[in-house]
Structures are given as structure tokens and as C-alpha cells.
Image (cartoon, rainbow, N blue to C red; front, side, top):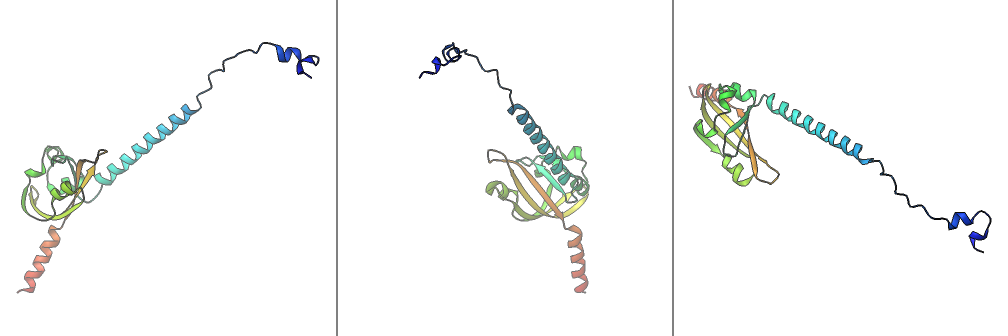
Length: 172
């Protein structure tokens, strides 16, 4: 038996089927996408702020330079140690400093081998002669080329002077 033979069913099964376009579904993904984007921007901003505080407030002298050694950022500890004001420091190339001696790996190793290097440098600055342990850390860009160099210094000048005085007292 055909379903259309039952009373009241003929209209149901033989009538024209209305073709309706579904209404545009609401974009449920857009608010999620916006939320994730907002959270990502906030996370990036927070990370950038933390990094700025970690460097700028760090008691260890630090410099950020271009791969050609032009200083692009210096923290307060470096400014204090060097005796150079920030405005003048940011116009300076590390090659302009008077290096009295250097041992260990230099920044060239960090650049050529793309790894952290360590050495000791004796440098004459406006604040005096400093004996510094120097770490040079290459910072890589997205294309795996060096975008900048982070120099971290440990000023061992006073410790070396004390050690020299102790040695002189021993040899009397």
C-alpha cells in the first residue's frame, strides 16, 4: 500500500517540496577567534613586559647590540658601571670602546658558531678600567639568522684587585 492512499497523507507526500535556503548560520567561531587573539596579544604583551623588567632591573650589566655591535639597549646596571649616559650609549658601537686585553672566546665565536661565548675583557670606560667576564648570547630571528647580541657582564675588578693585594701581602 502506497502511503498516499491513506486519508490525509496525500497532501503530505505529493505536495511540492518547498526549497528554502537555510539562513546564514551564526558565526560561532568569530567570538572564540577574537577571544584567543585577545588572549594571545595579552600574553605576548605580558611576556614582553616581564622580559623588559628582567633586563632593565637586573643588577647584572647587560647590553643588546646589532650583529655589527651597535648598542640598541643598555640596562641601568651597565649605564652605572660604564659611566656613560643612556643617550650617548645608544649611539655607540662596541668597537669604539678601548679594549686593553681580551682572553677566551669573543663575540666573533657567538656570531660564527651561533652559540653563547665566554671570555674576559679589560676595558677602559669613563668610570675607569674594568675587568669583566663577558658572555655573548646570539639572539636568533625567525629565519635563523642572528637578529641581535645580548652581552652580559660580571664586573670582577674589585675582586681581582683584592686578590692582587693579598698576593702582594703574602710576598712581603
